[in-house]
Length: 349
Ligand SMILES: NC(=O)c1ccc[n+]([C@@H]2O[C@H](COP(=O)([O-])OP(=O)(O)OC[C@H]3O[C@@H](n4cnc5c(N)ncnc54)[C@H](O)[C@@H]3O)[C@@H](O)[C@H]2O)c1
Image 1 (cartoon, rainbow, N blue to C red):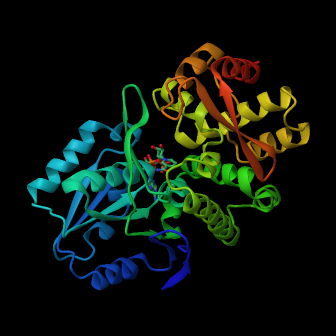
Image 2: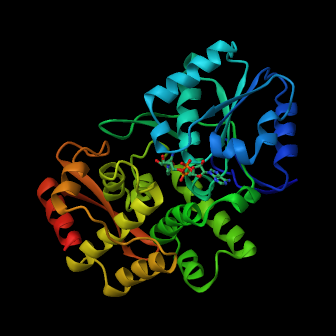
């Protein structure tokens, strides 16, 4: 049974569902022309939920990759492509990305390029992938030179969110996803930020409200600006420095934790430079601390600056940084390299 249809202004369905088996089965029944169904997942999700990857049994295949950010690579991409060709998958077939953001980003990229595009659906299993990466059509793999350097914008046919998958998620991974929830609240929704401060998101009912609100924020923003030419850039709050930290740590600092540090550092710098109030800055730090997310890192200003210069979102000599003027109202600041160096330096002090 479908609890909420969250799709509206996107071209695909995002649903919070009560029964994932039924939902997948009925999607496949309605779209009966799909012949083969290929579940792509990672070893951990496969171990925890082996029954899901054989649904429905007829013409169902399973491809299991290693867990972790290192799998968002050209090698794993090619491994999946070889698997698809080995079982003669063609454009009449369906791929199901079953896992966290790593599986979602990688499988989305496979789907967008295999035979010039094949249908796929997203079944996110981490908090981060439910509220963020499965929505917005961005697909990606990393290279030695940077995160998400190769990728496409490619819509899934549907996104099915089943909250029970979160029951097996570690607290560390849960908080990793909360960082993106906090980001959404800070850039667009003061009410959500108040809720995060005053209530306990570990309570099921509160969590469901928080997830629905986060999805709505992301959906609204990407619905108006799929290709990130304007408003969508707000979602990068904390990400410019965050991506640099992920890369500097060789991905031992996970995405959400790195974004948390990025948000804390940017807010500190803009507060010290007089662009935001002490109250706003402290609210951001307190909310991150409440959920035991990090607010600083071990890297120095030069290391961070050099890594940020490699960011694919840079526009020649200019870099767009996002900061919240106040909670719920973020803006884009287009800065020169010199200003960027100064901002990072203030943030590191
Ligand atoms: N496309 C986008 O718009 C977008 C947005 C934000 C982040 N991302 C990307 O998402 C990735 C991070 O995603 P993530 O945080 O989900 O990481 P992840 O996919 O690596 O999952 C984290 C860990 O949780 C495990 N796991 C997954 N589901 C589980 C479950 N239900 N129970 C127990 N363990 C489970 C995984 O095996 C993995 O070990 C990064 O690569 C980031 O760049 C993409």
